[in-house]
Length: 315
Image (cartoon, rainbow, N blue to C red; front, side, top):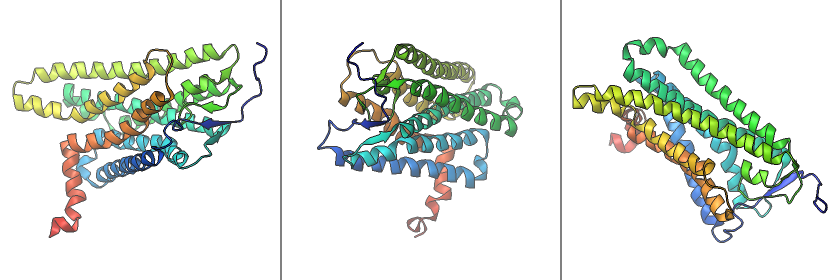
């Protein structure tokens, strides 16, 4: 195809918020507050689990690992986004773009794998309580967490390598506020770009759908077991141990399905930007709130460990 510019791009310009010139300061303040709340919420959960011996169980070990992955995921995206909201110079080098994509996919998929592991933990606790200490031994839990991180790293490496082996011919403007796959694929040229797009999409959807189906299977057995408990109090107590995890799963996969399963067609820059906020800012913001409010043991431990030490509580 003659006339096409085949000069390789060495840096990109992120234009995600360029269509909201009058709202950028408001977005900056809002997202900064949400980001700080996300960090503090997850750090509070981790500190509570670390200091409260009654929470030194597999379920809270996985929750601690989930909080770490969430902090690192937001760290890969939000600080750069906040800086761009205050800057007129929004360029990002090719290497920095690849690094951001690798870390965002690594920690994002690690998060999905850990949610799957937490579903398995609830399945064992409710359906096989007598074998729980054997199946969820400290060594077994450590292996599950380690494999979740390994799996996330493999996903990050596969996606990033596939995308950045393409040639980007320009224009160099990424229609998003971070280095995400769909807007980058629109800048790629070459006969292999469509095949790479389909391959990356298939890998991501297969991984997410596989995790989701495993969680669904775990909860199918959990619900079946809970319904056989004779007392209403016993059923409520059993289900209450799953409520926070189930809520986070619905939020996480609900927003993920909007991103990966949305129909193809012309998308506005404003729509893509606002949709991107749901899984980069809103979901991490909601997660510590859900776990803190809907998990009775964790809520009690936070009050005991931190709130009881406040001057107002002692006066």
